[in-house]
Structure formats: C-alpha cells, structure tokens
Image (cartoon, rainbow, N blue to C red):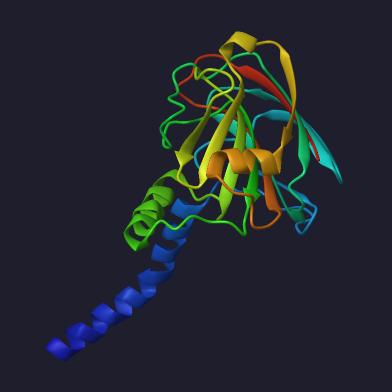
Length: 235
C-alpha cells in the first residue's frame, strides 16, 4: 500500500509540474504582448510592467531610432525593446511628460517607476557580485520582473530627484536623471555619449557594444489622472 501511495504521489507531481512551470514563467514575465518582426534591428512591444495594460499610443520606428507618444491612464504602460549590437557612440534623446509619478521613490528598485525612460544595455559587461548576491538578486527579480543581463544605463524623467543626478538603482544599472517635475509640460532634448557615461558610472570603458535598447513609459495604478508622454531616440 505504501508503494502504491508513493507511485500516486509521483504521478500527481508529474501532472501538476507543467502548471508550476507556467506559473513560474508568469512571475518572470515582463508583460510581453507580441513580437512582430522579432530579430536584430526590430522593435518588440510589450506592457511596461507585469500587471499593467497598454495605453493609447502612436509609434514610429526606423533603422536608427524610435518615436512614441502615449496617453496613459493609471495602471497602463508600454515598453519597446530592440536587440542588436551597436558601438557605444552618441544617442540623441527627447522627452516630454506632463504629469510625473509624484509618489514614487526613484532610489528604491521596487518603487522606481519612471514616467519616461530609455535604457541602453551592455550585454557583454557585468560586475563581480558573488554567488550569494546573485542568488538574492535573482529572487528580487523574480518578484519585480527580470531585466536584460549586463550593465545598463538608464536615462529617465525623474519623479523628484534633482536633474543631473547619477545613481545606482541596481548594482548593474545606473540612472541618469535628465528631467523632472519642474520640466512638466516641456520637451527636453539631450545628446549623451554612452561610452563616456559608462566610464563615469563604472570607472572604466565598456567591454563591448550596446546590445539592447529599451524605451518605456509607465503610469502606476495608484497615481491620479492620466499622463501624456513622448519619447524619441536616435542613434
């Protein structure tokens, strides 16, 4: 009888294992919606967060950049991701936001939700964090959502941190605040030298090229009222 019960338990575990795997994949998901034309040089659209829905949006993409305009009700957001290797030269960025996420804490990884941001990923780069820290980071990402591996430079419209600030949000992600609440309703244009910014953040030049670009606009569900944002990136 004990042997039969053991076999039934094993069979039951085999039946529920696929569901457990699907649940783990859902937790790890970044909210991806579709991947039309996926591949090097193509932009892939997704929701910006796991529990958010897509906002009203207008998008134009070319070989050397992307422009988006979004009207975000609370609880909506959108992200565009492009995979492809590019030399870390200069990037022209243009942001416009009329209603920032005033209640957000830009310094805390779990709370930093920028109304508009652009992230450049250096997938060939990493920091030596140690096994224990990597494991802890994995479980944090399991809850908050996974990001591309590598060192990341994020240029963001901040929620209250002084413009011009540079700080580590995660060990392998540095944020540069290019605009904030005082610029609400304006359009801000900047040109950044990616290799120079990498050196300022990590004290050395990057080991390889930019491997991914992420463009994101988000409006948390706990915020009040809609927000309009525009983001343009040109390589």
